[in-house]
Image (tube, helix red, strand yellow):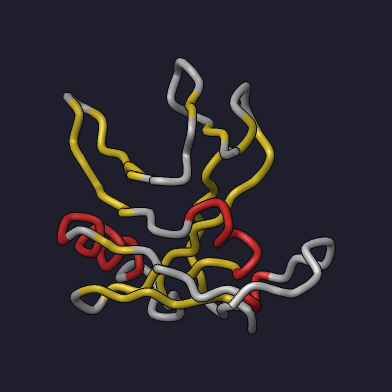
Length: 124
């Protein structure tokens, strides 16, 4: 449901598709959380960053914020601040190995362009 007044946008006014985790991402979140019994999962947010506009921010979560949305897969919990949903709704979170590197990858349908290094993305 969208607000009748477009000047007063609120993330609470929308029905979100949500985020999905691959099996590999879920396993990695569980592995990261297993190092500390107080960790509830991983939080994915966005911040203004890079040449394309926004960057992903991930951190371990001990106490989710009241407005965090929780997405789960195979026992793993991914928390997303409600304010980040307009930028990452529908994203698939994966964890991949690329040579010697291991990284979380984001298949974000809202990302219209990305910078050359892949560290930031833009939405329109």
